[in-house]
Length: 356
Ligand code: GLN
Picture (spheres, rainbow, N blue to C red):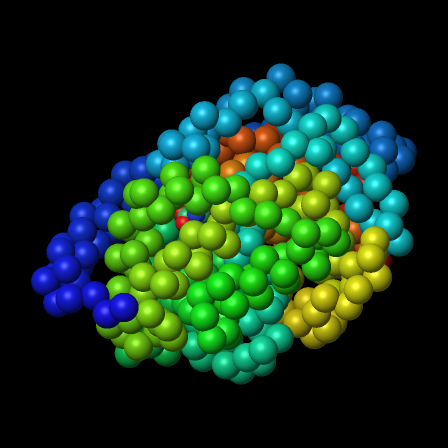
């Protein structure tokens, strides 16, 4: 349904305010990782490394729940779960590994995998972009700064910030809204290895206050970088952010990417290896938004996170490490999640930059 001109003007006015307020909301990033890296212990087994990370950060209370989504603000900050799934299907876990929470931005990765498979690598690069924005995940300003007239990059930036993820959602094919939603949830379910379902409460909670993302969609449309109707795309994007997962699901989803697109538990080929490799490249560039560089520097693994408190890191050819803990740093990444994954990666001596 087209949006009338007067409404569009109101949204563009909103956008200017929202660009500024997204800066105010995301105050300068605390150095979560550099601050608190323990001495690695290379003698630990995988389960011992998981236990160590669990015990070391069990009582960490830093960070705060996402306050701009009422449902997430109420999350129990004590819940904390860590899961590793290897590419041969072994599972190591500690804490609340089976607690269901909203996937939020982590879903962007799986919709990206589908759209990349359908559209191909060149189209994705030209229609969405694959550069880090260096700005908060919900930045509207980044759309202007990435404007291809100035930089040669497409305005959506990359598929993991909101602008790029909204543009990516607009490329999901289907004759009806339901068909598109089915594609999104089926793809994510194949990654997880079982049917995932929508958390209606979080979906309603986000839809009730979605002006910022709608403004982003309308701005993209004005630059011809949104490939479907803006209101329908925002509905699809919000649903995509609102399905439930557990830390265990997340580790299986990540292990599927570690395994070249083949789910290590169901053995289904969810995507081909090239798609999987490109998804991991985008995660390495932009998965932790404006702190992706510091993350890669300190931990050395492609990762992706959501304001629901989930975070998933992938060790290509080996495993995935997933954590749930709702309190976030100012960039919107789980504090305990980052600390736990860093600790495990250091103890197990894993990094994509390592000689072997
Ligand atoms: N649904 C959230 C939003 O659009 C997702 C953000 C996130 O997880 N970083 O703001």
